[in-house]
Structure formats: C-alpha cells, structure tokens
Image (cartoon, rainbow, N blue to C red; front, side, top):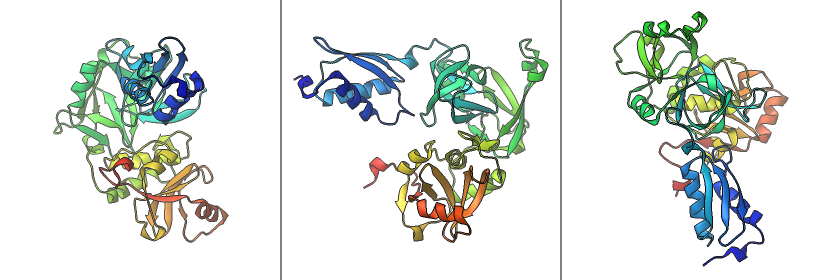
Length: 357
C-alpha cells in the first residue's frame, strides 16, 4: 500500500531520507522527488550501501512503489581508478574540491580511499577506514583497480613507529623518465603511515604500492596489530608540542580529535574522526573511574586522560599538544575545561553502541 498521503509534500520525504542516513560526513545523498505515477527519487549517492539504505527506509515508510534513479558515484569510476592509496607523506582532505577549501581531515601515506569522482585537480573520495568523505588532490593519490587493491591488502600491514621515517623509491622506479630528480625520494613519512610488506626479513623493507615498490628502514617500522591501551604511552613522546593544525592528524600538525584518532589507530583500534563522533562512540564513565586511555570530551574538543586528573590534548589556546590538569585546575583555562567537560568516555574493543545491552 502506498502511504504517500501521509506526507504533506515531497520535501518531507527527502528530509526523512536525510534524517535516516544520519551523519553527512560519512554518507552522501543529494536528490529530489519527482511526483508522478509512480513517484521517482532522482539524484546521487556515494555508495551502493547508501542506495540500499534509502530503499530499505522507503519500504519501511510504506513507499515501496517509489522508483529510485540514484546515481551511485562509486560505480561511475572507470576501471583502474576505483581505489587509490595516498602516495605522499600527508594528504589534506578538503570540504570542497578547491585548494582554499577548509581542511576537514588528513590521510597519511599508505591509507586508502574509495574514489567517488575524478577531476583534474581534486577528487571526491571516501576514507576506507572511517568512511569520512572529502576531496583529495589528485597528485597525492596512487590509483588502482579493485583487483590490485585486494592484492595489496593481502600483504601484512606495517606502520611507521617513529616520529618520521625516510622512504625512497627503489632503483627500478628511478628509471621512470616521468619522475623528476627532485621526486626520486618520497621524503619523511610521519608516525602511523601504512606499508604493505611481503618479506619482513629485508632491510630496507620493500613495501608494495599500486605503481610499484618503495624502500624504508626496517627499524623505523613495526607490524600493525591490536594491542592494549597502555601501548599508547610509547607513542606520546613523538607528539610533544606538535603544533595545532585544524583538520590535521599527523606528527607534522594535528587537531584534538585527529590526535586521539591517530593514537588509537597505532594500537589497532579504528575510532571516528571528529570529536562529536568519538563522543557518541565511547561509553560514559564516572569521573572517579577514569583511567589512562579514556577520552575527556568538551563542546567541540577532546583529549586523552593520563591519570591523576591530567589530560593530554591538542589545543589552539596553547598552540599544540600540551598537558592540562582537569581535576586540580592551575589557571583559568584549566578551570574552564573542567567546568565545560561533557563526558569521560571509554572505548570497548569489539563493541558498538548498538550492541550495548
């Protein structure tokens, strides 16, 4: 049965679809409802998964006869360009496809995206680890087919475990006449950069990228694996006084949520990108239960609880990654932090809020 009459106008249906999809940072939909017999929903979505969610939601609303003519962006990309790996030390992800657009995220060397739109300069992409949407400069990406992507993914994943590690193109790649002499080396890859390595016994390590191989010192890297929250402590010195950078998440510069996101990634735990997303994903605990590795949340801000009332956080007030005392404030800034704290949260491995009893 068609319950179209339950809605006052097409815009109401569009709004219901948008509300159901939720966070626009990880899910893209743009469309209009064309009235007819039957009605048709036209527009575009980022992935087939989003298309299916819209179809399922309309069916639940009793609008089974609404036809979907939604272009699925990921299915419009030609063979060989569906996936891409970041091939520069740090790639800014921007809100729009313009150089002067706001930086909303960063990806490090070796991280992967699903390509949604190709252009000369900026490509619309979806971060495969967190689903975060944005635009990356085309020259920062190494494109490949779905087959090549899965081939590389079968190799063990390693990560840079030093503040920076120097990576270079291997000898056979240096014969490429399209590479200028100043592009021979990739440069200093920051902590957390990803590598896919076939033979762990080589030094330097030979890491696979879509267009070939790179070399990197063995001592600078380690196998990517899940470890305890306490292992975060080993990475903290590399962030000491790293400057604040809006949208940043590397040892070159980081914002508050990018800082804790990267720390958790280093111990094999993928958490959301932004502070409000992280707050929703972490379980609330009481102040007297707080321990190292919990996150302290504030309006638009987040920090890592260190114990004894201390919090490490990247903040614009003090210009970078610094430590503050929440429970025993020493100045007006720390007093304001304590008064405005909205939650102390804890990550539970293998759990989601939906599965919480």
